[in-house]
Length: 191
Image 1 (cartoon, rainbow, N blue to C red):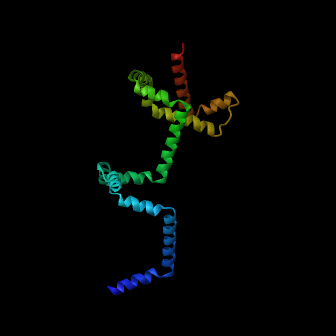
Image 2: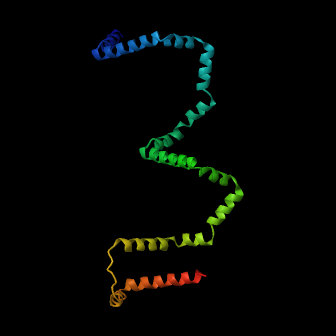
Image 3: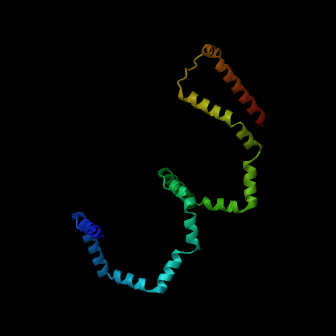
């Protein structure tokens, strides 16, 4: 037993440990000069105060939280990821901007008013919007085709002969058919 005590004292007396002990003693001296140690000592001797502190720390809510800690840990790990915190920060800034612009209040009001919500949902979910959703793939194809045509270099058509040569291309023939189909549909709906 005596050799363990000597080893402990030897470790404590090493230069780096003595520096740490000195810093700790300086900290205790500062806390004592500020009266903090007397305050803590007095608080520790006040059984009623200790009971209140322990009661606030150890209660049904904290015990429940501690027992659920394993369930919450994966969520906390997700929240600590850089990408998640950046996304949450972006979302919260977005909500703050909506609130500051005054847009959020009417939305919240609408969500709390079943009649208004029903009217908005009826306007959003109708035959036309369902048709757009059902034909979303071809609509995206059309948008992509227009984007491709605008970004690539196209030969200028300078004469009827140039147009005639282009009409021999099967893709142009299909495109012209689609274009005339669109023109026909526009004619049907115009009044």
